[in-house]
Image (spheres, rainbow, N blue to C red):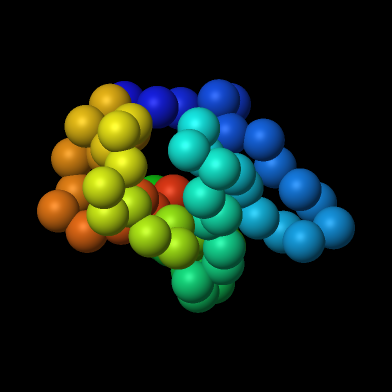
Length: 71
């Protein structure tokens, strides 16, 4: 699996760029609650299009596009 550290992050545009040059942009922002009751905010980024990407099998197991959750 590709790690987030391998994807450059642009803080001004709030997006990641994958190895193939595709953009992962914010899909939604939500809240997550742990078993202990701690609540945190997560941002979910989704790739614009992974169809035909030569890196996909090493990047995600998803049948769709790559998604990334950051808290």
